[in-house]
Length: 333
Length: 145
Image (cartoon, rainbow over all chains, first blue to last red; front, side, top):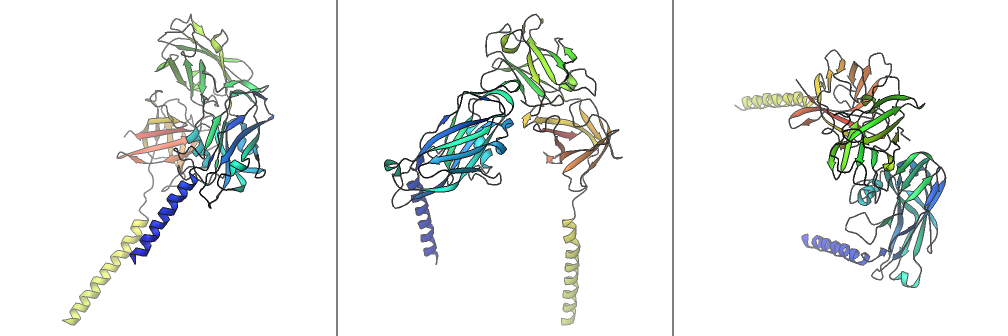
């Protein structure tokens, strides 16, 4: 009785191996994207992904799949609700729908969105306030061997999305893939991804959030209130400043309420205001604004203005290495 | 002789069966009520998964839960409540939340509660947001007494 079962197992293994070999050459061409240099806040911007299929399949097999497309955008764009993805191709035009969170990517065991974030990261952006969102075409496509030699198998995915209300400089992420595949790290045929050149969102609210360029001063988390714990970073390696080669860096800061009234100012140079060196010419200070500044229980800090100084307080560095202070506005949206 | 062995068999069977009846329910309902009373000191603090404990001085921060249902905080630090008050667990045996009611404040505050044993020691783990809901903090405490 054992023999027929063993034979069947070998047959399945052989078919599985054979299928892998047949399909391994059925891939996608390189992904390129068209992204404008700037877009107006609160308006809908349009981005395009361009790619194509190269089916090298052992005949008489065919390869049937659905198109996957993904975007990586700032969380503040609320793209899960706002983005609309459509495609055009010689095999027909159609729409893509967001893959449900409950559906897991087989290799990572995570949702497709989380798996994409883990696999592709945030590209050239330096501050992480992004989400990857993966979509799947509602229609499927069937390819035959070498179809691309006689037919145009290129396709374009159009992404329309409201770019939110905030001023920012950001690099966006894009992905195309095949629904019957997965995000296994070693695969380079079925998953194509790229990051755009910087896109600037203009005429919006608040200070410019520069995700792309190394900053002299940054605050993490990007969105916080005065009751959060925030981390201020001074990166002396970004450019030459008056604080070059200083071992000790201090924070000199003012806290304002929503009406612009000064609540407190701390410009002493002591353990409380001293930043800690974390290597690579970077210094950080973690602080809880409501405890750091002396403010009334009912007061709310809406904004910080601050400089970094040396141990004497005579040398100070502001926003963009100027005499203007760095600013940070407390907000969640 | 046959009769005796029959009786012995019957008595032994009854003993075995009756002992089974007593044991089975014990195993099912043996979950003890969670006792959080005591003084708890911060072991670890994370913000959005990033460990801040080595960067912030948390040595003096302690939360105390008393048997009379009140709690107190040792020092003003970023925490979900700032004033003393009363506490209760969402469920005595299987709690998923710790509910704090600060004095003079009508609103209750519920935080996510975990009570794991790590390296043989009971830990109290509380998760919540302090400012924006997108920022999650987790305090891991160790009992002091």
